[in-house]
Length: 394
Image (tube, rainbow, N blue to C red):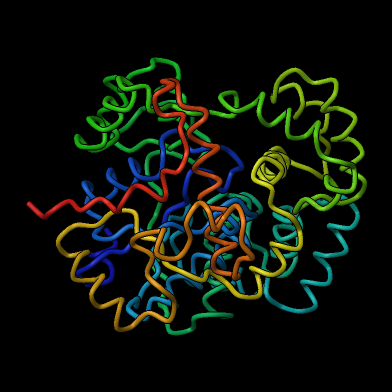
């Protein structure tokens, strides 16, 4: 659909790594998901650094847009949306970017309103767009993509692709296209690619997932890592908890208290949940704690934007794109992690900003693989050993 709408011959996919925007570990690891993407038609898959992937919609979108703009090859940004009317989306984005409206949003957030709800309230008041349209998850992200393009990459053309058949939170698979939520629930429930799942994903994707399940290379959920997360929280001081990204309004005290009571992640989240902190935000905070990401890190990286393009998988077309990237990109193309950072440097040396950002990605993989059902996958160092997967065009 991206190629059809844009007339472009190549598609580059920017994909979250082993931890994702909703604040959870991905069901399957980034290399296997990148393989699925290439076998489903993407030419080149690049990882969005963890410090942008595990963030709210605004910063997730800004990270993706800035990364694409840095490649020097990209003309269009395609994204899914419940409302694919670009004029409506752009009008909402312009309303959300207005300084006066931003001030009003900040006031609402100080009084306990979430960012998404504050954005929705301002847009509804100023533009009259129905709140259901504004609050739809992909529409919120679409608005943030358009805002980020205006701010960082006006040369990119936004292209909205309509969500069809299934809504973001739908739990039932009733059509050839299903929500990712429904697919995850079905895979976790059946521990296999059921007939319904197989209808809603590519044949190659189904084979890869079945292979992962048979080898114990996934699925991974929060519960796979909950003891490690609880241990990490119990080790952190109150000051260290306060310095976690997205922690405000004394939440660090509550986390410190409830982490001693809770015996699992579900219980912990229910103990610290409030109107100000939706579950996705709390989950992201727990991932930041797990990976050792601090507010100071986030502030610094938001200034620089993504500092490299880490390649996960590509096909024959993607190999051509890699050659072009070496000529056009404003940031390094990371094919071999060890060329920029090795495990000894990560442990002992003073790191550059690029190395610090890359170190977090490698730590994320090392911890993620501890959740693998089959212990043979629990070793670390995957980013230093695995090269991008090359899948020749058929």
